[in-house]
Image (cartoon, one colour):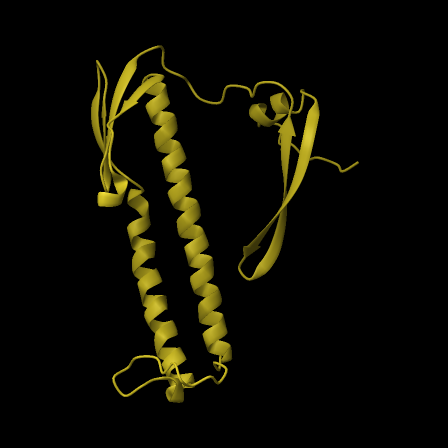
Length: 177
């Protein structure tokens, strides 16, 4: 048995642990270069309600490349998808350029005169300590961006479901976008 710590003010977690436990799964995530382990628990029955769910209202959703339009009988909204991520994207491109400069400085014989990679050179790539640190920073930043994007999409999905539960989405060819 593993002791479980639940916060006193977390009513959702307290109501979850009233049901019978079905499965436990260990998840390993790399955070700041260190392995972190999490337990994912599956309970029997239906999950407790966490958000207000709108009635049987119909909602129309039009998804664009960077925005989403939401239309219902009493509400019209145009929202930007994952709007708080732009700042981190600039930092990501800065770190990618830094990595490329470090890679080129450590391996000058692996590149042709025009800057392309010399595929005939089969030597192992040299990685400096600062290169490894920069790569770790970049991977951590990419993890944070992905988590923020997923969290933003989940918040948006919950806000759509608060308006109504019958969601109609325009048929789109996402490959053509």
